[in-house]
Image (cartoon, rainbow, N blue to C red; front, side, top):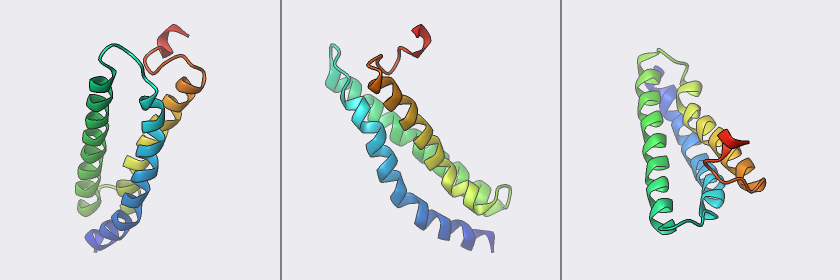
Length: 103
């Protein structure tokens, strides 16, 4: 029974990942540094890896019943949304992505 609920929430949550990847991608696309294309590519691969890691762990925990199904499947989107807000805020203030400690 938990597997069914997890799959239903997964089918609803994964399409929203596109929105959060887009919201993360816009500020990251504004990075202009030496070797900027490679940095953007590496960061994009890292974001995809982290999202997939959270999704896999959430699926396992949701199927086992350790987490409610909706939490297990929507947690990767919430993490990506928080990251998108953080990166977007830094880009809006023109501080850059990694300059939060200097502010």
